[in-house]
Length: 443
Image 1 (spheres, rainbow, N blue to C red):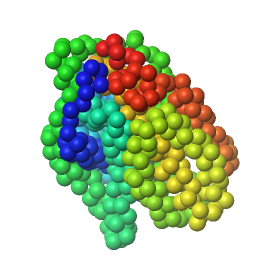
Image 2: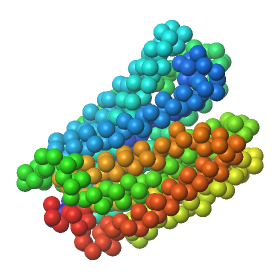
Image 3: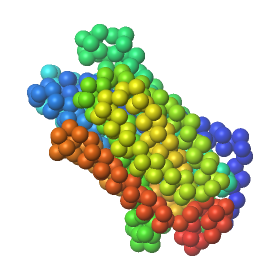
Image 4: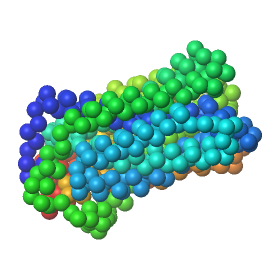
């Protein structure tokens, strides 16, 4: 890798993989807990001055707002990661997201402070997006830059496990609370528990991240004094093609998770499918994703990042209309099969190898900036569908076909962009054992 072989022992790699997975899970838990609460309580406690449907849309709107600050966090902490180290950026982002989540558990509601309650909620959500945007790229790199080239896809996928794991935890905790508490108790104080519990998870995550060793490639670069003073400017100047195609390749993955783990549940309930049915279906698909992510990551080490990634985008493209069709036709008993195809296979085949794929596109001195740019700008463009979904459903008179067409368009763009990117798996790339592809040879 850029002139040196990785000498991290297998035992150390396992510890780093587990630590990275747990640390990322904590941060995604803080990010996704807001999505669960938006659907269950925020419309009733923070947006009570408007009708229930508008309140639900407003609550989901504040959830979507977090995506708009993700690029800001990604670009800032990408530069920090390139200049001062991946580990330092990870510690700061964990504190930002964790403290913001804990504060939500203490917040007064609309009945107590009026309009200031939803405004404060919106501000905290913007902090969430800012922190998770800065976390993602650096978490990927501290794992991939430790990993041996022959298994970089597999080890990189362990960071990605944090997203579905962080999504499942809030669902499980809220399901337990809603089943054991009366609705009055849940709305009074029970909903605060998952947010307050986050402070314990932040403590665990902080301990784990402080124990991580800094990336050996970053340390080698610092030793050679080869870091770039303006890494973001440099990566935009030197690798615009990789940035543009990388963002395009991110679209289908981002759209798939937003559509099949968040939007489809709201659409299903509007069609009369009960929430427990959809929650169970999503839990099955996302729990399976915890297994399929490392499998697809390992497969990318053997047959290439592009092949696996293109397969995932194609699966989502083929599955989109049938999955939403099952919901529209009220075929409740088959929805879980559709979600497995879209999430546990299609999304996983993209998200599993994505860490290694993107990190291998850029040289060390600008890698955090490059990966963060692709991850967050691509996610912002793809997740804009969260805001557009209601409009697409409305102009379709409640049918999902316009929304499906939007998802399919994202998949087509991803297929074209991913195909145009170079193969980066060391066994298959022309550059040999270099992390960073052709650009790395010049770093």
